[in-house]
Image 1 (tube, rainbow, N blue to C red):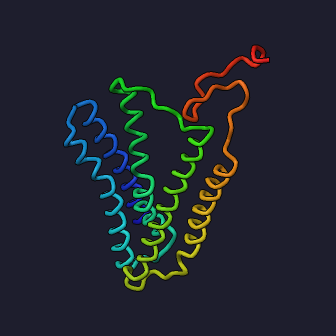
Image 2: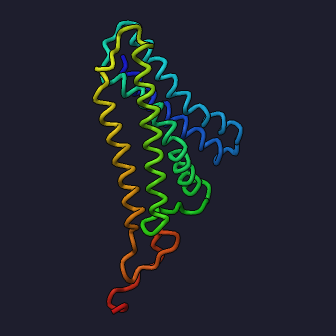
Amino acid sequence: MIVTLIVAAEISWWILLGLGLSARYLLRWRRTSTALLVGLPVVDLALYALTVLNLRGGAEAGWMHALAASYAGFSVGYGPSLVAWADRHFLHRFAGGPKPLPSPKYGPERTRYEWQVAGRTVVSAAITLTLITLLVPLSAGAAHFGTFAQWYWKLGIAAVVNVVVAGCFSIWPKEPPAGVTVVDGRVVEQKDPEKVS
């Protein structure tokens, strides 16, 4: 059952996102769009609530229950940036908006970008682990801390790795190669190497 709930929540999330952006840019219904997009975290919270009910109903706790809890953590940490990414691409594709800029590759802009990613990962991991931990008292004895031990390690390592990567970019900023013109960390013009030499 929990697998079905996760699949249904995933499909519902993307449908809501598509409907919200369509209402905003194709139909010009901004209030409807806002209401639909606000519903995105509601889907993840509903999945978490159903996960708790599934455990309280006698289901054996497993990694799928932790995965279901992780959706809410991901929604808080990465949801806003994912919605903003989809918004920019939808605006460009269907409403004549500017072409979305790629992520910065060089200089301090790349460093800031890496710290943003690290921050999202840390927030997602912290919320996910909190929700997983809460499954134990909320499950009426169906779940134990040992059941989810691997999640503490995996999410903890993911957060640490992201912070270390961002720290490395702070110490050793990535500089553009010779002959490449960069603005705001993004390549805007690449000269012919033969002409440069």
